[in-house]
Length: 333
Ligand SMILES: [Fe+2]
Image (cartoon, rainbow, N blue to C red):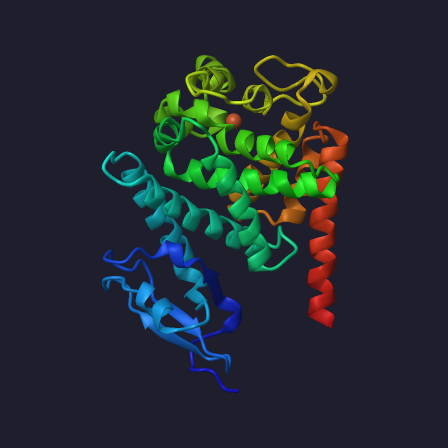
């Protein structure tokens, strides 16, 4: 079946419908795919969004796609929207949650695209559903949203990606108890909350240029995070443990307390390796290119000397290896 010129299926990214709020301008050209495989344009960039009608008209769920080059713009648009709406008291918490869900699903979509994740978009959506359910359980949900809303936008998607990668590591390590997974998700979601008290001038400056006082300030963020969360009722102590110890490592060279593996909270050991991995795949390397998941794992192992908890790191390595093999099999199959 021929496709309209200019649309390369490999360059289209499936996105969540929650990314397009009715009544707001569309941040990109939005397409759907016909059963024949053809992509058709259903919304033009900058036009007022009205895509929920599209869902009402069809009995089946409609999949939406954007071009790869417009994808980052769509996510940034939504992260900015989240920042604005979370701060607005008159916006209903369900709508706030839906916006978070849209960005969460895109984070997953991005992880899938980066070949971090083995599995379908629908399977990924299940994981996001779990993240969402867990977060909504926080009794002091309004207070949680308020705290979360003060995080800089890119930290929102970093926190979500860390939650997902932590869950994948748990799955690989056969950690299946729901209450444990919930704590991992909540801790990974909130791990960098203390960064909201670190001035942006420090955070935006290259780390190599930090003064000793700035390093000290930055290294206080786990402790500040715990202090912020003490205000929220019923945050489990394991979640506080993750927030406090997500920068510690097995060799005792982390911060703020430089404790060794045996003393680190077992769930913090998992989030620590996930956090470092997510940082590496989102940051540019020395040549200014994004690292692939394989390169990020090799970096932790060879350049950093694998300072993290061994079983957690090996689980991550296995996930990336399996994805790589699956990708190769697909390519030759
Ligand atoms: Fe951190």
